[in-house]
Length: 405
Image 1: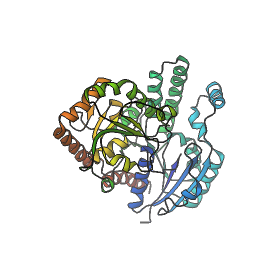
Image 2: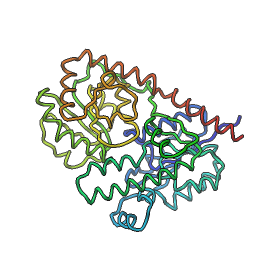
Image 3: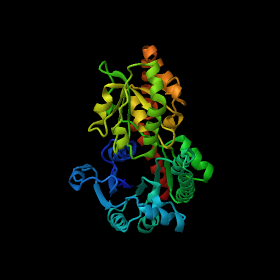
Image 4: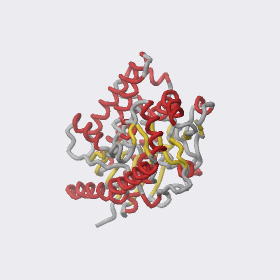
Protein backbone atom coordinates (compact mmCIF):
# COMPACT_ATOMS: atom_id res chain seq x y z
CA UNK A 1 0.00 0.00 0.00
CA UNK A 2 1.26 3.47 -0.90
CA UNK A 3 2.19 5.76 1.96
CA UNK A 4 -0.84 7.67 3.19
CA UNK A 5 -0.88 11.46 2.99
CA UNK A 6 -2.58 13.91 5.34
CA UNK A 7 -2.84 17.68 5.11
CA UNK A 8 -3.36 19.54 8.38
CA UNK A 9 -4.88 23.02 8.15
CA UNK A 10 -4.54 25.21 11.24
CA UNK A 11 -5.60 28.78 12.00
CA UNK A 12 -2.42 29.42 13.97
CA UNK A 13 1.08 28.00 14.08
CA UNK A 14 1.07 25.07 16.55
CA UNK A 15 4.20 26.53 18.18
CA UNK A 16 5.50 27.26 20.76
CA UNK A 17 4.11 24.36 22.76
CA UNK A 18 2.97 26.46 25.70
CA UNK A 19 -0.82 26.30 25.53
CA UNK A 20 -3.47 23.62 25.21
CA UNK A 21 -4.47 24.31 21.62
CA UNK A 22 -0.93 24.10 20.28
CA UNK A 23 -0.16 21.02 22.34
CA UNK A 24 -3.30 19.26 21.13
CA UNK A 25 -2.60 20.01 17.47
CA UNK A 26 1.03 18.99 17.78
CA UNK A 27 0.13 15.69 19.46
CA UNK A 28 -2.09 14.75 16.51
CA UNK A 29 0.46 15.87 13.91
CA UNK A 30 3.25 13.92 15.57
CA UNK A 31 1.02 10.88 15.99
CA UNK A 32 0.38 10.62 12.26
CA UNK A 33 4.05 11.23 11.51
CA UNK A 34 5.19 8.46 13.88
CA UNK A 35 2.62 6.15 12.28
CA UNK A 36 4.35 6.48 8.92
CA UNK A 37 2.09 9.00 7.19
CA UNK A 38 3.35 11.83 4.99
CA UNK A 39 2.29 14.93 6.91
CA UNK A 40 1.89 18.36 5.31
CA UNK A 41 1.20 21.21 7.74
CA UNK A 42 -0.33 24.40 6.33
CA UNK A 43 -0.86 27.11 8.94
CA UNK A 44 -1.92 30.70 9.27
CA UNK A 45 0.74 32.90 10.84
CA UNK A 46 -1.66 35.38 12.35
CA UNK A 47 -0.97 38.87 13.65
CA UNK A 48 -2.38 37.88 17.04
CA UNK A 49 0.01 34.90 17.38
CA UNK A 50 2.72 36.00 14.95
CA UNK A 51 6.03 34.13 14.81
CA UNK A 52 9.00 35.55 12.86
CA UNK A 53 9.84 33.66 9.68
CA UNK A 54 13.40 32.86 10.75
CA UNK A 55 11.99 30.94 13.72
CA UNK A 56 9.41 29.14 11.61
CA UNK A 57 12.00 27.91 9.15
CA UNK A 58 13.48 25.79 11.96
CA UNK A 59 10.17 24.18 12.96
CA UNK A 60 8.56 20.94 11.76
CA UNK A 61 11.50 20.13 9.50
CA UNK A 62 10.92 16.41 10.08
CA UNK A 63 7.51 16.53 8.38
CA UNK A 64 6.97 16.04 4.66
CA UNK A 65 6.31 19.78 4.38
CA UNK A 66 5.44 22.82 6.46
CA UNK A 67 4.19 26.07 4.99
CA UNK A 68 2.53 29.14 6.43
CA UNK A 69 0.72 32.21 5.21
CA UNK A 70 0.85 35.52 7.05
CA UNK A 71 -2.70 36.56 7.96
CA UNK A 72 -3.98 39.76 9.54
CA UNK A 73 -6.69 38.74 11.99
CA UNK A 74 -6.67 41.81 14.20
CA UNK A 75 -10.06 42.65 15.65
CA UNK A 76 -11.50 46.04 14.63
CA UNK A 77 -14.59 47.39 16.33
CA UNK A 78 -15.83 48.73 12.97
CA UNK A 79 -15.74 45.18 11.55
CA UNK A 80 -17.63 43.90 14.58
CA UNK A 81 -20.36 46.50 14.12
CA UNK A 82 -20.68 45.88 10.38
CA UNK A 83 -20.83 42.14 10.91
CA UNK A 84 -23.43 42.49 13.65
CA UNK A 85 -25.69 44.64 11.48
CA UNK A 86 -25.23 43.23 7.98
CA UNK A 87 -24.33 39.53 8.42
CA UNK A 88 -25.71 36.42 10.07
CA UNK A 89 -22.34 34.66 10.19
CA UNK A 90 -20.06 35.03 13.22
CA UNK A 91 -17.32 37.58 12.75
CA UNK A 92 -14.81 34.88 13.71
CA UNK A 93 -15.38 33.03 10.42
CA UNK A 94 -14.88 36.18 8.35
CA UNK A 95 -11.73 37.03 10.25
CA UNK A 96 -10.04 33.82 9.11
CA UNK A 97 -11.21 33.80 5.48
CA UNK A 98 -8.35 35.34 3.48
CA UNK A 99 -7.65 35.31 -0.26
CA UNK A 100 -3.91 34.65 0.16
CA UNK A 101 -4.52 31.61 2.33
CA UNK A 102 -7.13 30.30 -0.10
CA UNK A 103 -4.65 30.52 -2.98
CA UNK A 104 -1.95 28.68 -1.04
CA UNK A 105 -4.45 25.99 -0.03
CA UNK A 106 -5.44 25.46 -3.68
CA UNK A 107 -1.78 25.08 -4.62
CA UNK A 108 -1.10 22.52 -1.87
CA UNK A 109 -4.20 20.45 -2.64
CA UNK A 110 -3.22 20.12 -6.29
CA UNK A 111 0.49 19.40 -5.70
CA UNK A 112 0.33 17.23 -2.56
CA UNK A 113 -2.85 15.27 -3.40
CA UNK A 114 -3.70 14.29 0.20
CA UNK A 115 -5.74 11.23 1.13
CA UNK A 116 -7.01 13.10 4.19
CA UNK A 117 -7.50 16.78 4.99
CA UNK A 118 -7.83 17.52 8.70
CA UNK A 119 -9.12 20.97 9.67
CA UNK A 120 -8.18 22.09 13.19
CA UNK A 121 -10.76 24.87 13.68
CA UNK A 122 -14.42 25.07 12.78
CA UNK A 123 -13.84 28.66 11.64
CA UNK A 124 -11.72 27.30 8.77
CA UNK A 125 -14.77 25.49 7.42
CA UNK A 126 -15.23 28.42 5.05
CA UNK A 127 -12.48 26.75 2.98
CA UNK A 128 -14.30 23.40 2.79
CA UNK A 129 -15.92 24.09 -0.62
CA UNK A 130 -12.46 24.75 -2.05
CA UNK A 131 -11.09 21.56 -0.47
CA UNK A 132 -13.88 19.48 -2.00
CA UNK A 133 -13.50 21.21 -5.35
CA UNK A 134 -9.76 20.57 -5.61
CA UNK A 135 -9.51 17.19 -3.87
CA UNK A 136 -11.24 13.85 -3.27
CA UNK A 137 -9.68 13.61 0.19
CA UNK A 138 -11.49 12.39 3.27
CA UNK A 139 -12.36 15.54 5.25
CA UNK A 140 -12.00 15.63 9.03
CA UNK A 141 -12.87 18.34 11.52
CA UNK A 142 -11.05 18.29 14.86
CA UNK A 143 -13.34 19.85 17.43
CA UNK A 144 -11.28 21.34 20.25
CA UNK A 145 -14.38 22.99 21.72
CA UNK A 146 -18.06 23.31 20.96
CA UNK A 147 -17.45 26.99 20.38
CA UNK A 148 -20.91 28.41 20.92
CA UNK A 149 -20.98 27.10 24.48
CA UNK A 150 -17.95 29.23 25.38
CA UNK A 151 -19.64 32.42 24.24
CA UNK A 152 -22.95 31.39 25.71
CA UNK A 153 -21.27 30.96 29.08
CA UNK A 154 -19.54 34.34 28.85
CA UNK A 155 -22.84 36.01 27.95
CA UNK A 156 -24.51 34.58 31.04
CA UNK A 157 -21.80 35.85 33.35
CA UNK A 158 -21.42 39.41 32.05
CA UNK A 159 -23.31 42.12 33.94
CA UNK A 160 -23.14 44.71 31.15
CA UNK A 161 -26.46 44.50 29.31
CA UNK A 162 -25.07 45.72 25.97
CA UNK A 163 -22.16 43.29 26.11
CA UNK A 164 -24.50 40.51 27.18
CA UNK A 165 -26.80 41.14 24.20
CA UNK A 166 -23.85 41.10 21.80
CA UNK A 167 -22.36 37.91 23.24
CA UNK A 168 -25.74 36.14 23.25
CA UNK A 169 -26.25 37.04 19.60
CA UNK A 170 -22.73 35.90 18.79
CA UNK A 171 -23.31 32.55 20.53
CA UNK A 172 -26.40 31.92 18.38
CA UNK A 173 -24.50 32.79 15.20
CA UNK A 174 -21.64 30.48 16.12
CA UNK A 175 -24.04 27.66 17.01
CA UNK A 176 -25.73 27.92 13.61
CA UNK A 177 -22.36 28.11 11.85
CA UNK A 178 -21.07 25.07 13.72
CA UNK A 179 -24.16 22.99 13.03
CA UNK A 180 -23.93 23.70 9.31
CA UNK A 181 -20.22 22.89 9.28
CA UNK A 182 -20.48 19.61 11.21
CA UNK A 183 -22.74 18.11 8.55
CA UNK A 184 -20.27 18.78 5.74
CA UNK A 185 -17.33 16.69 7.00
CA UNK A 186 -16.75 12.97 6.51
CA UNK A 187 -15.57 12.54 10.10
CA UNK A 188 -15.78 14.60 13.28
CA UNK A 189 -13.20 14.25 16.04
CA UNK A 190 -14.52 15.92 19.21
CA UNK A 191 -12.01 16.06 22.01
CA UNK A 192 -14.44 15.06 24.79
CA UNK A 193 -17.40 12.75 25.31
CA UNK A 194 -19.49 15.67 26.52
CA UNK A 195 -18.84 17.62 23.31
CA UNK A 196 -19.79 14.55 21.29
CA UNK A 197 -23.05 14.33 23.22
CA UNK A 198 -23.85 17.98 22.47
CA UNK A 199 -23.11 17.49 18.77
CA UNK A 200 -25.22 14.33 18.55
CA UNK A 201 -28.11 16.09 20.27
CA UNK A 202 -28.06 18.92 17.72
CA UNK A 203 -27.31 17.03 14.50
CA UNK A 204 -27.42 13.50 13.09
CA UNK A 205 -23.76 12.78 12.48
CA UNK A 206 -22.82 9.52 10.78
CA UNK A 207 -19.13 9.33 11.62
CA UNK A 208 -17.83 10.72 14.90
CA UNK A 209 -15.03 9.49 17.15
CA UNK A 210 -13.98 11.01 20.47
CA UNK A 211 -10.24 11.62 20.35
CA UNK A 212 -9.01 13.22 23.57
CA UNK A 213 -5.81 15.14 23.91
CA UNK A 214 -3.03 12.61 24.34
CA UNK A 215 0.01 12.67 26.59
CA UNK A 216 3.50 11.49 25.73
CA UNK A 217 4.30 10.12 29.17
CA UNK A 218 7.98 9.75 28.34
CA UNK A 219 8.26 13.55 28.14
CA UNK A 220 6.49 14.26 31.42
CA UNK A 221 8.77 14.88 34.38
CA UNK A 222 7.42 13.55 37.68
CA UNK A 223 7.80 15.75 40.72
CA UNK A 224 10.30 14.92 43.41
CA UNK A 225 11.40 16.01 46.86
CA UNK A 226 12.18 19.49 45.53
CA UNK A 227 8.48 20.24 45.03
CA UNK A 228 7.06 23.05 47.15
CA UNK A 229 3.48 22.82 48.35
CA UNK A 230 2.43 26.04 46.67
CA UNK A 231 -0.30 26.74 44.15
CA UNK A 232 0.25 27.56 40.50
CA UNK A 233 -1.62 28.27 37.30
CA UNK A 234 -0.31 28.64 33.77
CA UNK A 235 -2.37 29.58 30.73
CA UNK A 236 -2.64 32.08 27.89
CA UNK A 237 -4.24 35.26 29.20
CA UNK A 238 -5.50 36.32 25.78
CA UNK A 239 -8.15 33.64 26.36
CA UNK A 240 -10.89 35.43 28.25
CA UNK A 241 -11.88 32.38 30.31
CA UNK A 242 -8.37 32.17 31.83
CA UNK A 243 -8.25 35.91 32.48
CA UNK A 244 -11.63 36.08 34.19
CA UNK A 245 -10.98 32.90 36.16
CA UNK A 246 -7.75 34.23 37.68
CA UNK A 247 -9.37 37.58 38.46
CA UNK A 248 -12.25 35.81 40.25
CA UNK A 249 -9.86 33.58 42.20
CA UNK A 250 -7.76 36.50 43.45
CA UNK A 251 -10.76 38.67 44.31
CA UNK A 252 -12.99 36.07 45.92
CA UNK A 253 -11.00 33.02 47.03
CA UNK A 254 -7.52 34.21 47.94
CA UNK A 255 -8.32 35.95 51.23
CA UNK A 256 -10.26 32.89 52.41
CA UNK A 257 -7.32 30.62 51.56
CA UNK A 258 -4.91 32.76 53.60
CA UNK A 259 -7.20 32.57 56.63
CA UNK A 260 -6.95 28.77 56.78
CA UNK A 261 -3.47 28.37 55.28
CA UNK A 262 -1.31 31.38 56.28
CA UNK A 263 1.86 31.52 54.26
CA UNK A 264 0.40 29.67 51.27
CA UNK A 265 1.65 31.09 47.97
CA UNK A 266 0.18 31.23 44.47
CA UNK A 267 2.20 31.67 41.29
CA UNK A 268 0.66 32.27 37.87
CA UNK A 269 2.08 32.83 34.42
CA UNK A 270 0.97 33.06 30.82
CA UNK A 271 1.18 34.83 27.51
CA UNK A 272 -0.44 38.30 27.09
CA UNK A 273 -0.60 38.98 30.83
CA UNK A 274 -2.84 42.00 31.57
CA UNK A 275 -1.23 45.02 33.22
CA UNK A 276 -3.68 44.82 36.11
CA UNK A 277 -2.18 41.45 37.07
CA UNK A 278 1.40 42.58 36.60
CA UNK A 279 0.90 45.38 39.11
CA UNK A 280 -0.79 43.34 41.82
CA UNK A 281 0.50 43.84 45.34
CA UNK A 282 -1.21 41.05 47.25
CA UNK A 283 0.39 38.93 49.96
CA UNK A 284 1.41 35.53 48.61
CA UNK A 285 0.36 36.18 44.99
CA UNK A 286 3.14 36.16 42.37
CA UNK A 287 2.56 37.09 38.71
CA UNK A 288 5.38 35.98 36.40
CA UNK A 289 3.92 37.04 33.03
CA UNK A 290 5.12 34.75 30.20
CA UNK A 291 7.79 32.23 31.19
CA UNK A 292 10.48 30.90 28.87
CA UNK A 293 9.91 27.32 30.01
CA UNK A 294 6.56 26.04 31.25
CA UNK A 295 8.25 22.83 32.39
CA UNK A 296 10.68 24.71 34.64
CA UNK A 297 7.89 26.90 36.00
CA UNK A 298 5.80 23.86 36.94
CA UNK A 299 8.56 21.53 38.10
CA UNK A 300 8.94 22.71 41.72
CA UNK A 301 5.25 23.43 42.43
CA UNK A 302 2.83 20.82 43.78
CA UNK A 303 -0.74 22.17 43.52
CA UNK A 304 -2.34 23.18 40.23
CA UNK A 305 -5.28 25.58 40.69
CA UNK A 306 -7.67 25.98 37.74
CA UNK A 307 -10.49 28.44 38.59
CA UNK A 308 -12.32 28.35 35.26
CA UNK A 309 -16.01 29.16 34.94
CA UNK A 310 -16.52 28.89 31.19
CA UNK A 311 -14.99 27.17 28.18
CA UNK A 312 -15.33 23.87 26.40
CA UNK A 313 -12.90 21.23 25.22
CA UNK A 314 -10.37 19.71 27.57
CA UNK A 315 -7.86 21.26 29.93
CA UNK A 316 -4.53 20.02 28.63
CA UNK A 317 -2.65 21.54 31.55
CA UNK A 318 -4.72 19.47 33.97
CA UNK A 319 -3.90 16.23 32.15
CA UNK A 320 -0.22 17.12 32.07
CA UNK A 321 -0.29 17.99 35.75
CA UNK A 322 -1.98 14.69 36.57
CA UNK A 323 0.66 12.84 34.55
CA UNK A 324 3.34 14.70 36.50
CA UNK A 325 1.85 13.70 39.85
CA UNK A 326 0.49 17.11 40.84
CA UNK A 327 -2.55 17.76 43.03
CA UNK A 328 -5.40 19.40 41.14
CA UNK A 329 -7.95 21.86 42.56
CA UNK A 330 -10.46 22.96 39.96
CA UNK A 331 -14.04 23.91 39.16
CA UNK A 332 -16.61 21.83 37.23
CA UNK A 333 -15.82 23.88 34.11
CA UNK A 334 -12.10 23.32 34.62
CA UNK A 335 -12.39 19.52 34.74
CA UNK A 336 -15.00 19.42 31.97
CA UNK A 337 -14.19 16.78 29.38
CA UNK A 338 -11.90 14.78 31.66
CA UNK A 339 -13.64 11.68 33.00
CA UNK A 340 -11.84 11.78 36.33
CA UNK A 341 -13.61 11.44 39.70
CA UNK A 342 -13.73 14.19 42.30
CA UNK A 343 -12.15 13.11 45.56
CA UNK A 344 -10.32 10.25 43.85
CA UNK A 345 -8.25 12.01 41.18
CA UNK A 346 -8.74 15.73 41.97
CA UNK A 347 -10.39 18.18 44.38
CA UNK A 348 -13.52 19.97 43.18
CA UNK A 349 -14.28 23.58 44.13
CA UNK A 350 -17.51 25.41 43.34
CA UNK A 351 -17.24 28.34 45.77
CA UNK A 352 -14.44 30.47 47.24
CA UNK A 353 -14.78 28.52 50.50
CA UNK A 354 -14.24 25.27 48.59
CA UNK A 355 -10.85 26.43 47.33
CA UNK A 356 -9.86 27.30 50.90
CA UNK A 357 -11.04 23.93 52.24
CA UNK A 358 -9.18 22.09 49.45
CA UNK A 359 -5.89 23.85 50.17
CA UNK A 360 -6.24 23.22 53.91
CA UNK A 361 -7.03 19.53 53.28
CA UNK A 362 -3.85 19.16 51.24
CA UNK A 363 -1.73 20.47 54.11
CA UNK A 364 -3.57 18.52 56.79
CA UNK A 365 -3.53 15.25 54.81
CA UNK A 366 -0.32 15.20 52.83
CA UNK A 367 -0.08 11.43 52.52
CA UNK A 368 -3.66 11.17 51.24
CA UNK A 369 -3.05 14.07 48.85
CA UNK A 370 0.06 12.33 47.47
CA UNK A 371 -1.98 9.13 47.00
CA UNK A 372 -4.60 11.11 45.07
CA UNK A 373 -1.89 12.52 42.82
CA UNK A 374 -0.62 8.99 42.11
CA UNK A 375 -4.14 7.80 41.22
CA UNK A 376 -4.44 10.75 38.85
CA UNK A 377 -1.18 9.76 37.15
CA UNK A 378 -2.40 6.19 36.71
CA UNK A 379 -5.71 7.45 35.32
CA UNK A 380 -3.97 9.51 32.62
CA UNK A 381 -1.67 6.62 31.74
CA UNK A 382 -4.67 4.36 31.15
CA UNK A 383 -6.93 6.73 29.19
CA UNK A 384 -4.78 9.43 27.56
CA UNK A 385 -1.50 7.78 26.59
CA UNK A 386 -0.45 9.11 23.18
CA UNK A 387 0.17 5.89 21.27
CA UNK A 388 -3.18 4.40 22.34
CA UNK A 389 -5.12 7.51 21.32
CA UNK A 390 -3.54 7.99 17.90
CA UNK A 391 -3.92 4.30 17.02
CA UNK A 392 -7.64 4.56 17.74
CA UNK A 393 -8.16 7.51 15.40
CA UNK A 394 -5.98 6.18 12.59
CA UNK A 395 -7.79 2.83 12.68
CA UNK A 396 -11.09 4.69 12.15
CA UNK A 397 -9.65 6.81 9.35
CA UNK A 398 -8.27 3.74 7.59
CA UNK A 399 -11.71 2.09 7.74
CA UNK A 400 -13.33 5.10 6.09
CA UNK A 401 -10.61 5.28 3.45
CA UNK A 402 -11.02 1.56 2.81
CA UNK A 403 -14.74 2.02 2.18
CA UNK A 404 -13.86 4.48 -0.58
CA UNK A 405 -11.33 2.25 -2.36
